[in-house]
Length: 278
Image (cartoon, rainbow, N blue to C red):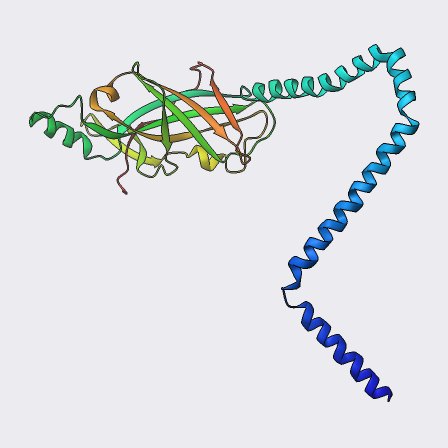
């Protein structure tokens, strides 16, 4: 009989579990639980309110009558203090954007392909309106950046350019500098009365992004080249171009780079030219 009873209980339990696995009962139970919980919650808060009304109403009325001014001041300070903290934090955060300074050692604007100058010349000869034709240019800066604030990581750069009197426009950062090299020409004695010969050497541009891969450390200077691309007419490219630079850290915060205006660092030897390896 014991075995029979155990088998009955086991069968009942299995059937119960099987029934619970069906979903038809969910909405019914959910509605009932919602009604019960709403009733309990209403009675709970009602009991608290009744207790406060019966025991604290007269006490609070007396306090407000005698110390209303002090309570008002405390309330105002409670609201004002967080606001002041937010304002100070915003000011400090804004001030951080001036913690990074840069000296623009040299800048050079080149068509982004070595064949473009020849194409421009051919188009001019053919009578094309060069005031309307736009071309892709690379603006290359050699910069020396000093971080005067806290250590930060460096995710990317953001730059804007003003061409002539036009409005500021965003530039596209190109991380790869392999299309260009430093071309260094030196005169050396030719020997045997042959005067001088010009010896040309080439070397890769020092990539600023590679040098700062481990972040910008406080009170440290970093020197290297950066590259940006934009479209402009031939005449615009030959005119004045102003640029602004921002450093974007790993958290997405922007740090404006303030140009120092100093010219006390000598540019790297050579001129920027197209790479022979591309």
